[in-house]
Amino acid sequence: MAKAIRSDSISIPTPGELFAALEKPGKPNWAGQYRGPVSATYSNRAQIALNLGGLIADGFIAVEAQDSQQVKNIGTDIVKLAKALGVSQNVLSRGNSINEFAEDSEWDALQEELEATQNEVKSSMQTHRDQDLIILVSVGGWIRGTQVVSASVMQNYNERAAKVLRQPALVAYIHSKMNDISPEVHDEPLVKEVSNQLVGIEKLVSFPPAKAPSVDDVRKVNEAVGKIMDEIQSKEVK
Image (cartoon, rainbow, N blue to C red):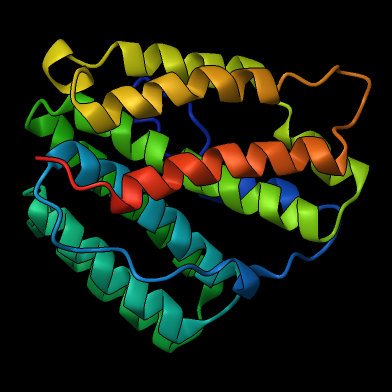
């Protein structure tokens, strides 16, 4: 994923990179990883940013499933959340491109367009000095991506795929970036909850290097990131 976003200092893997690692052992059931619609009416900016990251991950899932209608639906939702963050002008053209590529089933182009969309969102936030929200978009995408990867491994377990989830250094890094968020935003209940939950997830993904995690280990990771995803998606924050 040469086009993976590096416009900020975060080296959190994009959902596309996480899913590419899964492709090697076997073809996952991507359509089986769909979830219900995400609200477009959140009022809290931190919550919107976390959900926007998760939605971009959903876009990658739909591309992997080669489901053009689902890609278009998610593209529309991405634009709605982007508008709520004030970056709609930068992302609107990307939303149109996503629709066009989906209509023509141009899957490789869609992969690149989703990466570019994430780039546009972050670049716009950088311009507005919204570094906190840039971090949260990346974290939201990683959480949703890890939820999907762990669920896929559970459905079709093999050791090689399971080892993708061994990432203690990465989770420690993500947690450190959460701690870099301004006190005003970090002290918000949802942001604080996500940050606190990452401590437990770091322990869950600290498998011994020579040993693949068991199905039960993978299930625990899936449950932990699923709990955070539920909080991000449903917890209304003022």
